[in-house]
Image 1 (spheres, rainbow, N blue to C red):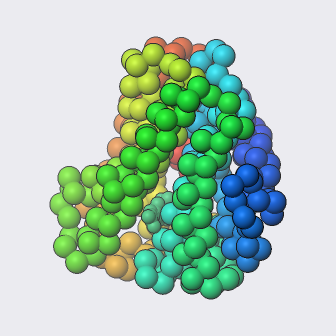
Image 2 (tube, protein in one colour):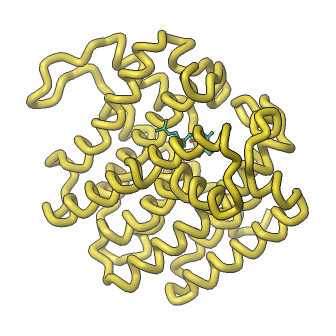
Length: 305
Ligand code: GRG
C-alpha cells in the first residue's frame, strides 16, 4: 500500500468516526425545540438505518472538499456531511423495502423493515429525509443564512424528482423498458451520482468558495459519481454478498441494463481508469491540497465492497 493510500484510509476512518459521533448525538431521544416527543420505536429504526457501519463516503466528500479552502468550518462540514448521510440512509431504507428492491441484508445486518416492520421502515426513511434539512437549518450549524439556503436548495435538487428519487423512478421503469446507453447514464447520474456530486459541491458552498472552484468540485463530483456506479455494477457482477454486506448478482438476474452488461468487464475497467485520470485533471488547479480527493477517486474506482 502506498503512503498516499495509507493516509487516505486513515483519514476516511477518522472522519467516519467523527461523523458517527455527530449522527449518534443528533439521533438522541431528547426532543429538540419545537418537537413534542421522539417515539422510541421510530427513533430505534432510524438509528438502525444510520448507525450501522457505512463507509460514510458522502460526508467524507463534504469534509474533504471543504478542507480545500482555508477558513472552512470543520464542524459545519461535519454537520452538512451528517445531513447528507441521513438522505443516503433514507434512500437505502426505502430501496430495501419489498415494494422496491426487497432486500433482507444491508451493511451486513437485517434491513430496517426486517428488524422492525414495513410501516416503521417507511416512516424511518421519511423522518431521515426531513431530518437532513433540519440539521442544515438548525442554529447549531454555524453558517451564514444565505449559505444554508444554498445548501438546502442544492441538496433538495440532488435528492428529489430531478435527482435521486427521480433516478430511482427511472430505474424502476427500466425494468420493463430497457433504456439505451444514454438512458442508463442519465438514470445513474440521478440515482447515485446526484448525492455524490452534492457532497463535493457542498464543501465549496459551505466554504464560500468562488464560482469557478464550485464548478470544478461539482464536475469532480459528477466524474467520481460515474466511477462509483460503474464500480458498483462491476461489484454486483463479481463480488459475493458476504463481502458486500448486501445481496449481489441482482442486476444480471433481472436482466437490468448497466454499462457493464452493455460493454463488458474489460471496457468497464478501462473506463474506470479514464474517469480517475479525468478526476485528477479537474482537481489539478488545487495542487497538492487535493491529494486526499484524488485518492478518493482512486478508492471509488478500485473499491472491493
Ligand atoms: C428509494 C428514493 C429512493 C432512492 C433509492 C441510492 C438508491 C436510490 C438506491 C440504492 C440502491 C443501490 C444499492 C445503489 C448502488 C449504489 C449505492 C447507493 C450503494 C451504497 O452506497 P455505499 O457503497 O454504501 O456508499 P455504504 O453502506 O458504505 O453507505
